[in-house]
Length: 399
Image (cartoon, rainbow, N blue to C red; front, side, top):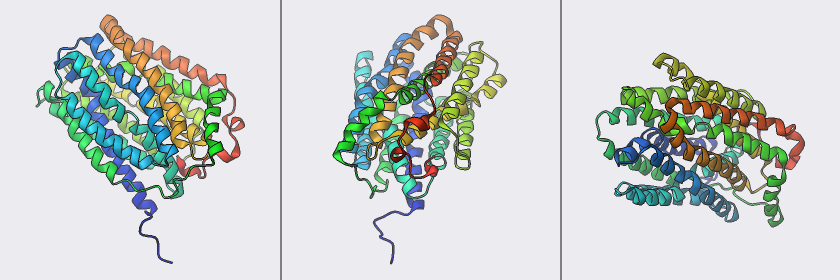
């Protein structure tokens, strides 16, 4: 019997998803290092930059659960993703037209309502659809990381050419590509919820102490990146490093992350081991960066991004995919996203004050935060003992 042309093949599904991850992460690659430079060009001091960078994280606490619930309740992951991608494009265009600090903050909040759920929804879409097609998460997700490099290096090169007040339009252009890629995503033809009684069971995860331990651990480890995300570009620019050098430093970290994602296709890593490696890598990385190391040492430390971010991300999403009740993958990923956003928002809000007071010494506080995250892993027991068999992924290739 010939294949149904409306149902994408595994290759088609994976490549369309890879294209969306690439466009989404390219936009992120421009935003993360260089949007703080645009804020500074608009007259914001370090404390104000820290506050405005915390706004998307606070908005994410509300927007992500709403978007995730809509996606699960109406079996509409793809539709919610497309809506968010188009909305974020239009809203960030509005950000670029603002000048006053309060107006910029309000516009960023609106844009964040559309933009911040996208990565969580993309992960839920990937972890639902890829196993159905016999495809792994890591090899598809790594294309997002590769595009992040393009965004950081390209943004760094353009930083030496464009005036800082024009950097916002690079973000808008990248979001235009993201909206186009969202429209190309394949439908999830198996996108059916479990019974209505299953929906209430999503909240059972919030009473699972091992799930909470994993969520808190991942949140603290990822939140330890706050100073790096918010102020590394400003610090390195003040030290006389070119935009291209800044972009390359960020790219080194993401290349290491890509290598880990690629390896995850060939090896099954236990989520707890991955999270422990993430905590250890973050403690070493931030502890060393607190001493404002020279460029060659910085380049080596950037390789630890494979652990501080990459291993933490893989471990967290793998655990949540295993723990999620049937038909509630987006909601379960949403719970994790809320924990990540809350921790990052608090860390980002204080990072501006820390950086203003002690400069690179602020990384010392981030090392302590990651260490506490690692200790949280000791609060639970073997994850397999807490997860019913029916809630595990259908294929180990989900990672």
